[in-house]
Structure formats: structure tokens, C-alpha cells
Amino acid sequence: MRPNTAHRKNDRTMSLLHWLHDLLNFALPARCHICDASLAPHERFVCTHCLNALPRTGFHRRRLNPMEERFAGHFPFIKATGFLFYNRESPLSSLMQDLKYRKFPDIGTMLGQLAATELFPTGFFNDIELIVPMPMHFHKEARRGYNQTHYIAEGISRATSIPVSYPLKAIRGHRTQTSLSREERLRNTSGIFAVKDPALLNDKDILLVDDVCTTGATISEAGSAIIAAAPSCRIHILTIGVTF
Ligand SMILES: [Zn+2]
Image (cartoon, rainbow, N blue to C red; front, side):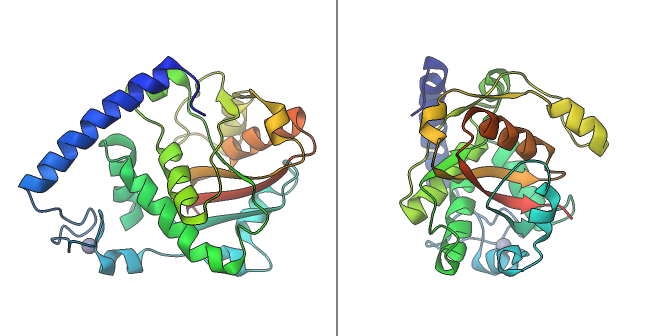
């Protein structure tokens, strides 16, 4: 449940943006956000060729999963995977830039649906009861107009019918992580999350969702905050992109 008036205001702004977006799409043919080819009527944001070429990690099928090794020892979790390899030069990078900074939140819905549709047959979602997107600090979300991870979570929910819940809160902002060392990132993210509703999480299998995992510091901080507030919560992790 989106709890406050800021979210409602954001929703109204987003409705207007969607309307303008639809109007532009009607007037101009939609183009692939990666290769700029014209899209067929059934394609959304990315052409079929580019969609198939996005580099799947396949981590969820590996016994020694590099994503799980990244989080091991930081907080207790059940499983973790990143869906696509991500780096600044990869096609996914331009798609993520459009999702985060150029007012295309529905790219998040599309990527969430894609990830969930491909992971679903492997049993990845079998035990999951709630989808929990990583929160963004209020000021940052107000500036951007939306939290892209909410849209990714919504896409996963559409493909799996698992409900989305918002029990986490970012209680302070943190500097952008890109230029920081691992130690600096851990300090930078320390104490940024609070759990608003521990009762919602206790004794539940939840899927913690984020857009991109770089060092894992932010997700580790959220996972630690969840376990501290709701010790019997069982955490599963899925990010769209992962850097290695
Ligand atoms: Zn393309």
C-alpha cells in the first residue's frame, strides 16, 4: 500500500506523463530504446532482437552462484540472483538510464515481467509470499517523480500474481555509489533503512527487489534491517542487473 500524499501526488504526475507519452507514441512510431529500430505493434520499448540479446546471467541455475557469494556472511538469506549482466557499456545500461532518468518508468514494468516470466518455470518464485521493492529516500523520489524499483516489482507481480508490499522506508539519503570503494559504500549505506511494519514480514518468504546490484552494499543494509526488525523473515533477492 502506498502510504502518503507524496505518493498520490507522484501518481497524478505519472498519469499526466503517461498520457503525454501515449500521445507522443500515437503521433510518432515507437522505436527500440537500444538499437533505434521501429517497433512492431506487439513490442514494448525494445525490439525482439535486442530483448533476446540482453545478457542473461543464468545465476539461478548455478550451484556456486556468484550473487549469493556476494551476500554470504552479511545477513541471512535463502537465495539471490541477478537476471542480466550489467556494465556501463552494455545495452542494458542505456535502458536503465531511460528507466531512471528519462521518465520511462514502464521500462521497469517490462523488465520485471521479462525476468519473472523467464525465472518462473525454474521454481524461483515457489515459496515467495510478498514482493518488496527497495525504497528510495523521499526527497530523491520526489525529484525523480517515481521509484523505478516499484515499477520493476509491479512487473514481477503481474507475471507471478504475488502481491507487492512496501514495508521498508529509506530514512536518510546516501551519496551516489559509483565512485566509492567497497568500504566507503558500506559506510555510506549504514543505517539508511527502517522497517515500518515488522508484523508484515515476520514468518514470511519475501522477495527483495532492486534495479541493479553493484557491490551489494545497499541490499545488504536493507536485508540486515529486515532481519533486525523481523528475525523470522526469509529473504530471497532478485535484481534486474548485476555487475561482475
Ligand atoms: Zn533493438
